[in-house]
Amino acid sequence: MSLAHVLLTSLLEKPNSGYELAQRFDKSMGFFWFATHQQIYRELKRMEEAGWIDSYAATDAGKTKKRTYTVRAAGIAELQLWVQQDFEPPALRDELLVRLRAGAILGTLGMEQQLKHQLTLHEQRLATYTMIAQRDFANTRDLEREKQIQARILQLGIDFEQVRIQWMQQTIDLLEQLTTTDVAPSPEILS
Figure (spheres, helix red, strand yellow):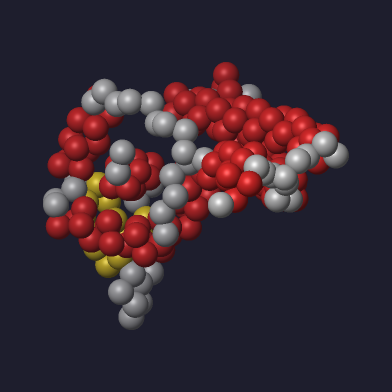
């Protein structure tokens, strides 16, 4: 997947200026695809050069360079091709898990504090997702097709955060239990 496909999807949902798109991105697509605002602007330029999108001076631009972006037929065709392509499920790539593995070899390094911090961040994200679900998707049966699918995507985020929180709580408990019986790493590891 590329940032272009994420942006095409966003622009099909609602044509926006680059700034508005970046703001919307942070509150929607950004939950599962990270991009800086600079990356978004660079990609918009590349997509326009490729003929996937058009831009025009925004009606409220005044003397600024504010432009509104819309998807062209070529962009829709690209997105349709991409949606239909087979793809491999993403591999788990998680820095926390590597740090825990390193800590397992090296001995106690205070990972409990890092896990507690991460736990707080995941609890905050779960609260955000739950608030969005209650605000925007309270009764999914009455929602149009697009909103029902968006609700399912959000539910996966909620489920992920709940599992992650449970796993972190159990891991913190384990690390605190092991701290009382921890032994220093063997001399071979340290040399």
